[in-house]
Every structure is written in C-alpha cells, then in structure tokens.
View 1 (cartoon, rainbow, N blue to C red):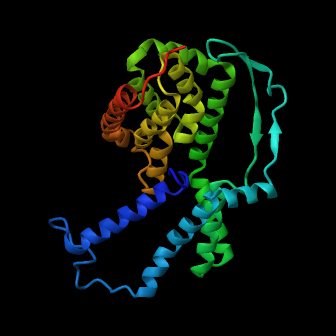
View 2 (cartoon, helix red, strand yellow):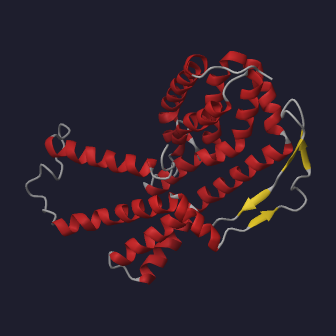
Length: 299
C-alpha cells in the first residue's frame, strides 16, 4: 500500500490466506471432518482444472495492479475524466476560523473518472474471465443482471450514505462535530478511531466513512494538536473493524448464503468482536499519537 496503493492489499491478503488454508488442510483436518485432501474417494483435479479455477483471480489481480499504476491511471484519465462543477454549490460555501486558519471557499467538483476507476478493472476482469472459461456472452449478461438485482439494496445503501457524507461536509456538520470532539483533548486519538469504526458501521465502506468523517478528523486533530495524517489513517484503520457489522455487509452475506431474515442474529454474534477490535486499534493509535508521533501545538 505504501509503494503502489491500496487497491491490491485485500486481494493479495486473500490469496495468501487461501494458500495458507490450502496448505494447512493438506496436512491437517478438523476432528470429525473429511476434506478433499484426505478423502481417497474424492475425484483428483487435473492441473488444467486447477488453473481454470485460479484464472479469474489471476486476471483480477493483474488488471487491478495495472489500473493502480500512475502511468495507466493517468492515460485512462486522458480518455475520459470530465470535471463537473456542481452548480449552486461550487465555491459558494465559506469555511472560517477556527475550522481553518484563513477563510476558504469550498470547492464542489465531481471528477467522473469512470474508466480509471478500480470498479471498471473489476468489470473487465469478470468479462475476460467468463470468456476465457468458455461461457457464452448471453450467459455472462444474464448472471450480471441477476447479480445487480440481488445486491440492489446494498448499492442503494452505499449511494445514500455516500451522499450523506457530502451533505455533512457542505452543511458544516463535520466542522461542528470536529470542534465538539476537540474537548476530548489527549484522548481524542482513541475516540477518533472509534468514529471511523462508527462511520463504516453506518455507511458500509471505508471510502464512505472517509467522506463522512475525514474532514472532521483533520479539523479535530488540528484543534487538539495531533498529527492530522495519523487521524486520517486512524479513521480508515478503525473503520475496517466496523466492516463486519455494517448493514451492507450483513445484507450481502445473507443474500449470498441464502439466510435472509437472519441478519439480526449475525449482527448480535459479531458486534462485540467488532467493538473489541476497534478498541484495540484505538489504543494503538493513542500510543502512536503520544509516543511515536510528536504532537503539534493545538490551534
């Protein structure tokens, strides 16, 4: 993530996890269970079949990696990445002290970089994988439409919460909350991390949480004398721990496993695990803010 970007972190972690699990199950199995690696009657997979199974992951990783490089992203943006100034909003809202050092007009420019977006790389990877696996175009299109229909509630949730983040920013709500959180003073790194956790729990994604609370984190950090970069990172780090309890993830999990109607049970089972992990991250950020990162004078 430091040298390339965040796009491949989850993919590489997933591949390594699956490889480690496959290696473990090759030599060990849970008591009372028989895995394919230990079942003599299980059909043996050919090398070609194994490669076909891994092909979508390989294509996805290569394309997402390419899309993440500045050269490719810059070239794709030259094809189509219009910047749309939102009428009635662009530079019509003024931020003043103590939120900022000097009065500054808020820009409202929407960068429609639809070709260079990571989602476009994922879509192309899915299409290429389908064709290389021998699936007809009609079958791929049908599955795509079915998938969109199944995750439509999640898509609407993401869009609504992302919109809420921008409303929070341009209405000044983030500034008001930031000044209020400044009263936690030296304990703010801990509570700021939990704020990121809450943001993902509400919005369903780190991106939406950063839109919702990113400005707040920077404002509050400047007020209490904590490194703003650290708190921006803490918003994402704490947010990861809220991923397991957000409505979007639980709805998608229930849809994928055909357990609709049991979302409440899932939430109750994982809530305390999520809160405990977020608190541990908050303690780590608190230590970083007071020991490893020199504090700056508060505004």
